[in-house]
Length: 549
Image 1: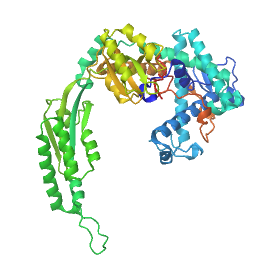
Image 2: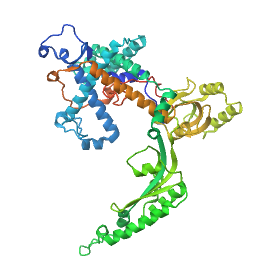
Image 3: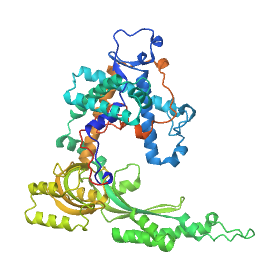
Image 4: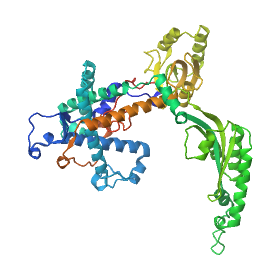
């Protein structure tokens, strides 16, 4: 049930996703030849530190991985129709395609962009491997079992695709990548992940430490909620424009160029702004916007409702260079502000809904649920209500809840572990599930009955997670620790790049989706997700629940 209770992938899958970032990276050959150009392609060292090196296969792999992930990400986000607009064509040489997503030094084509990503990934890989060695980090049996499982999954995928494992590795993972190379790289990635985890885990994120950061600059971690609406002269002038008659000898007057018409429209929107600023409360503010859109501007009713609804902004942070933000962080709930710009022909009205404060709403939480799936319980919630009422009548005990999960829940992803899941507020959940779980008043031990598109759920709040403001500070501290450590490693270990020896073939198209294992490049965000250019620190999370389609 991806949309209902989609969770992070299991640790084994996370490492599979990240292994791509390390394939082909290995320990230096003690007796490597001085004449690098005369060596076989897979032995040509293109980047090295004191103890470790990468060769062209790793660069090809990093390049392929960067391309595949970027392409699939853009395709998923923008859709196939937008790919041509972005200028990234999977069927044409990347060297012939200008880079269109910004300006970067040394990047003129998409080939340049992916090659740069590959080199950055290789460099960070080497730095972390050196650091892991010095820190005395070792792999355990679980690590090796996970690596074995990933290799076996790739072999299985090759078999399903009907190609040899050698061909599969080269076509999918990059030129020169073999099973031996992949195994060595999976080990290196695990070393790297363990090292980064040790750095991040050492950060003091106690309540005392988090409060100290907050007290030093409260405005950085406080938010407000407000409503706003902008009246525009242009909207009135457009509404008053005469309809086109199709007669060439009777051109319509352009109100936008008529100073008198513009001044009259400006006077009108200022009067409307005064009226809006005088209304009492959120509901009246919403209704005024809706009526103005419909009655004055002639907006469709459904669109007007959308405009009025989206007038509310929740959880807005402080912005020092915005006067409206300064006002919002000093005003009282219910106060209004009018901000006029005669030159632009706009007047904006603000209503403060919630005064500045720390966001205490939980960002994570552990919840148990019993799903009465519609495929089995097609009775409009009758069974769920009966079971819930009886459970409450008997004292709403947790041990009874666990028994009911086993007896009734149709969620195969949790009906063997007491219906337990841990979610983040950012996870993709259906609205009813998310609204119940992350209600600002939710407390440990709360229970209830909700309906989603997949059926009825009896809910039980196992525990409420860390408040939002604490989560923000914790992430900042961990990110800073990660960034500082990476900078230290760059100073400590010398990375030598032999750019003239780098030989990475271009790509005509990505590997077919149906033959590819579930791999992905390391995320490009610092912990708590992952280093910007290096192996990520994958948290040990539960497998995605199967609570529906």
